[in-house]
Amino acid sequence: MTPILEMRNVGVTYSAGSLWGKRTFDAVKNMNLQVRAGETVGLVGESGSGKTTTGRLCLGLQKPSTGEVLFRGRTFGAGEKPRLAAVLQHPRTSLNPRLKVGTSIGEPLVIQGAMFDERRDRVADSLHKVGLRPDLAARYPHELSGGQRQRASIARALIGSPEFILFDEPVSALDASVQAQILNLILDLQSELGFAALFISHDFAATRYVASRLMVIKVGEVVDEADSISLFHAADHPYTRALQDASGLLAG
Ligand SMILES: Nc1ncnc2c1ncn2[C@@H]1O[C@H](COP(=O)(O)OP(=O)(O)OP(=O)(O)O)[C@@H](O)[C@H]1O
Ligand SMILES: [Mg+2]
View (cartoon, rainbow, N blue to C red):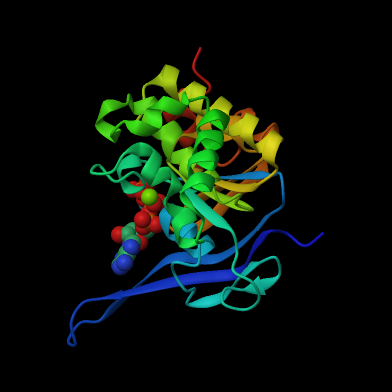
């Protein structure tokens, strides 16, 4: 079966500096990744390791400097438009503070040309999927709790029935108890809806909880890779072990 998303030997080089001292920096090096329908792949690494850059590549928001990113076996721009969505660390990037939550959630449908009644029904359905009452659609983002706001961003991501969802640090701004609820929600939604997902975080424990396969990234390079069960135990790679320690996974 063709993976929903695939990266083949992908590299991203940023250049910075002036005419006199041009420097290049490899933010992602030789990345190979496959995400299949119904599967969550986890990408863990410290700050600046290239996680968000990898996520942007998956959404087609960034072009690789080398290699190729394929959606259902085709490069972006070839074939039909991929159904992609993203849930990011701060819901304010997906929920406009000046718009009612329901309007933001239904916005992707406006672009598709859906009429008001259809939008209202699908927004209610999407809110239901993420465990929010339909009347919350009439509130503004600041009238929701942090956990409810993140549920609303997930509702917005789900509204176009995406085949692939990028989660970039979706629980990093939340309290531990709310984090667990959101991680469980992601797991439940995936088994119900069957989308492919890339879950990105600096938190080893959170990533392992939702992902079936983990890739550990350090300065743009994958340094360790295994299924979540084998990486539960103290890893051989010192960098992976440091990430495990930092997330308290092996404490006690
Ligand atoms: N547009 C850009 N131009 C130049 N360098 C960039 C650009 N975007 C990111 N970088 C650099 O690429 C590296 C990887 O950045 P990236 O945002 O992918 O890291 P990250 O793993 O998501 O970090 P964090 O956990 O802090 O979000 C960093 O060193 C960053 O400074
Ligand atoms: Mg990032």
